[in-house]
Amino acid sequence: MTSTRIALLKSEGFTLTREYLVMWMPLAEFSQDLPSNPHVRIVVVDPLRDENALRTLTALENAAFVEHFNYRPTAEEEYRS
Image (tube, rainbow, N blue to C red; front, side, top):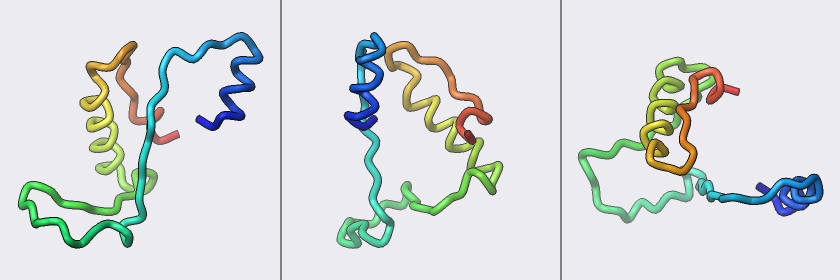
């Protein structure tokens, strides 16, 4: 969340309880010097056009955050939006 949005929400009386960081990198910039791992496959997906990808990404997000503070599962429709 940008500092501008945080400032706006604080000005409306909200308090920041936690924040997290999402990182991304264009696949073309991904290091090719890493050793091969037969258990990992990197693919480009479009969850808006591929229902299977949407289901998989939703399940991965829910599994990754299940132990986080104030967890609630994300529905596929919510992830899509």
